[in-house]
Image 1 (cartoon, rainbow, N blue to C red):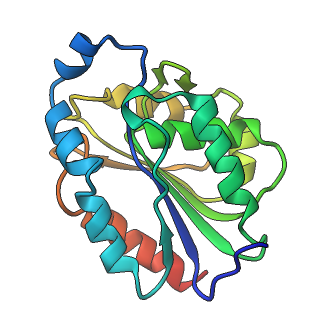
Image 2 (image 1 turned 135 degrees about the horizontal axis):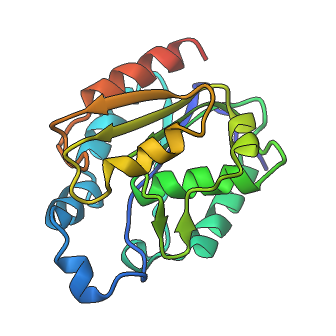
Length: 204
């Protein structure tokens, strides 16, 4: 049975960490405490879901073992999730940190149109982390949606700002939302993203 909601559907992929870093390296990362306590325990995620609840349905799947993540496990969950969605459903995909990398990697490899992606928003994607990596198969990725957005802050201490620049320079029609004071986006609200998605879902 497929899912065909009355409102647009937003899929939010949270961040995580890969086994590519040792435990010592992981817990020594600047800002990692904020990432663990705010992002994965639903800081701005929760505020985002509450703000969007009247205009869209928000799915926020718990990705497998987020602090010991493996791409194939996350891909398998996405495969199952997307098969539940009716192709008529307007979908907006948001990925944060490792979730952003997973989204770009996934839709760079899956040539078939699994759902109607109205927009893709990649927030602070990491270029390479364990089995996760931004793909250079740009043509397939851009074919997934005509609206691709990158969001990153120059003061991010978890994922270098240059990782988003690397991807942006290879995309033809992406929009870059640049900040200078948001770190790794672990605040309790992300108003700019909320406002943008509200506008998008109102026209879906």
